[in-house]
Image (cartoon, rainbow, N blue to C red; front, side, top):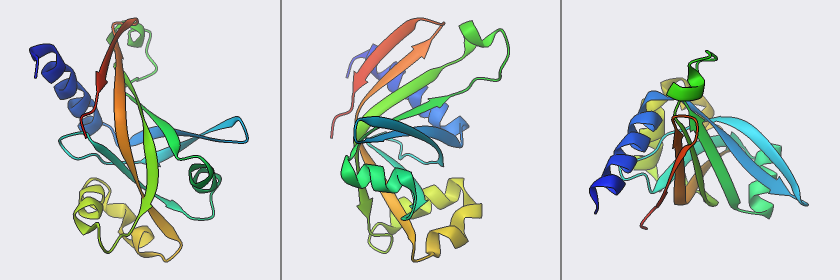
Length: 151
């Protein structure tokens, strides 16, 4: 692995560790839809996990079209953000996974979001895993670095 790739992945991992929420974008019938989700990722960044009720629009959208994107950033709504903020967009394919079988992944998510434990146990709550394909990291306003995820 090149030093640049390693550094980019480390920067993405640091950002993901520091942030609790992401914007998830789904689509259905050629119409995009964005939602805020509480998330967690493993250290290798290959997957992105979140919970959602199975009655939501985002759930229906990802069942109809599993290709999704996520956006995580560290903006603070300050003028300096234009040059100091870091933003990562990731693309991948989402699927519903079994909470009972994927306990290690669920533990990862609940370790970051312990307040979601009761929600995670509801029979109507779906556990979603996105197999990430690539990340685009933007910093210094217009410096864009793309890195493919090796599955």
